[in-house]
Length: 260
Image (cartoon, rainbow, N blue to C red):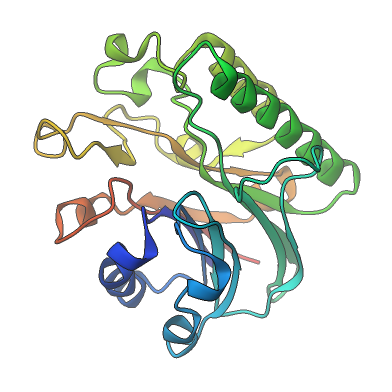
């Protein structure tokens, strides 16, 4: 089973690029972020015609997450537990059944947090505490799961071409990195780093200042897997080349293959 995460930066602007990638990469499941669309505005029929089941948790003009799956999606839930007042569409869960086991898919778009310090940064850190609590509850239930998406976290200096330029940014502040590490330290595996320790392994290049051509990137899109899932990983990758295609997102897909 091939599962990917992809921040598409707007479904209306990126439907062509997303379609081309789906046709080429053929993921069984794609967890999408920043669809920037209400549920009824998402082009579900287009992707259903490609063989995907579609579930969305949308929001007008901002945020929004979705799941495209060639496999049936079961027990779909929307919104990260822990704060009923949170109206931002940043989290969706569903279960898929492989040949041997079910996997809980958690698709997320973690808050950026800038400017910091300030209320947006406070919201980011509070959101991460809720994400940690959700991961712990899934672990307590002994449910195989992965949490994949745009985390807006640069975990280590090697995950940025110029780490010194991110020192005071919400993506790289020590509080952010520590919060991410607390989640990983529950016993989760960072899929990319489990197989690829090399520097210059990025998933995002800004549109400004020729970042793509200079490979001035950062790694902020992550797949974290519980041990029950990580044991079945057979391959992992980042489809960086599509950043150079027409009308690209500033993010690229990160994917994992599981023998489940």
